[in-house]
Length: 174
Image 1 (cartoon, rainbow, N blue to C red):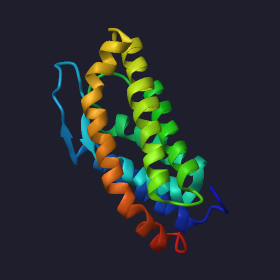
Image 2: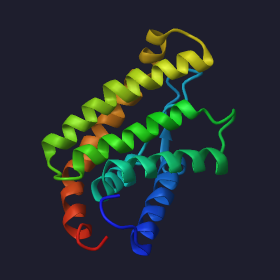
Image 3: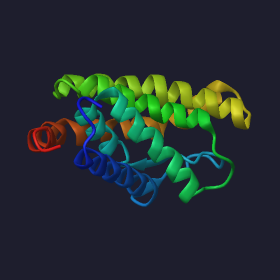
């Protein structure tokens, strides 16, 4: 975290974790693109981006990683917890923290969203899925292409106007 750990910061970080779990699991649109694809459109990125903006790379990664672990324990969707997916969630939070901890603007939102689209969603997640559940990497990329692109557009559409406003309101309070 950027500065000392206070009760206020800890409670707000816990609220961000809870919001990520709720937005990712309950406020979502599943995309049954292929039979095996469990991709979805959700706003789960918003609390992680806010956490990265307020608490830096370490805080953003911690919020995303803990939310992923708690979501898998409390609301399992079949199968065991895969720590490789937790690492991708952690990476996403770290990227948000690196991009937004000093400044939030449209260029940074677009840049971090592009990196998350290609490196994490299409790259790492496809490789982990192919490694863990079988299939080829390129087949997994193909199944994730449409949901990942829709999530990219949603990220840009939500984060570009809202993140600077959230930053102005919360930066001095939390």
